Amino acid sequence: MDVNITSEFRHLARVRSLIEERADSVGFDRAAASEFILALDEALTNIIKHAYHSQPGHPIEIHLSMQSDEAYAEITDYGDAFDPDPVVSAAQHYKELPKHRGGLGIPLMERLLDAVEFDIRPGVRNVIRLRKRRKVA
Ligand SMILES: Nc1ncnc2c1ncn2[C@@H]1O[C@H](COP(=O)(O)OP(=O)(O)OP(=O)(O)O)[C@@H](O)[C@H]1O
Ligand SMILES: [Mg+2]
Image (cartoon, rainbow, N blue to C red; front, side, top):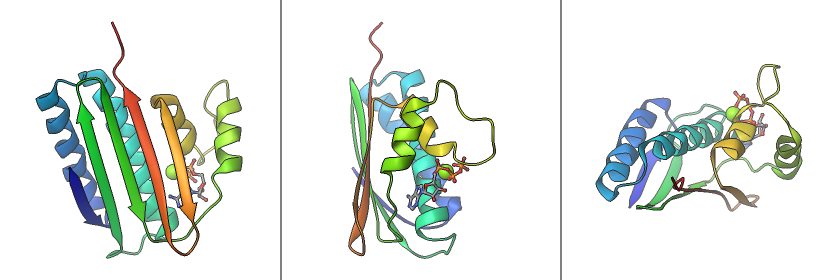
């Protein structure tokens, strides 16, 4: 399923409920789905805030694949590039989330998901891939 939005926060509620509906219809675990949705919401918030500097009207493309055992999203934007490597490696070393304000989004995404992958081509497009497998009981 593909969902295209523009860079305004008011679209995020619709994206969240779309994913919730898909998760329910394919039988993806509800608790895992809400963690996936939280991470995806944070990825979209980062794109609007940092890649598009909170300017409206810029494209964000979301490709979503929900199966009973796995949720996967690929998010593409055409805003500012950044180097995720230092942020990601710092996040992986946190034993707990840092207490200072800001800088919580990527560590949170890493904690909630099985895989977070940034594929940045400066001046071309930025892709973020999010994957969460269902917890096996
Ligand atoms: N999609 C993105 N495009 C461009 N820069 C990004 C993107 N995501 C993150 N960044 C950069 O990485 C930094 C860390 O992101 P992170 O989400 O961890 O923290 P934050 O957004 O600054 O604060 P918080 O998420 O806690 O409100 C950001 O401050 C920003 O500079
Ligand atoms: Mg953030």
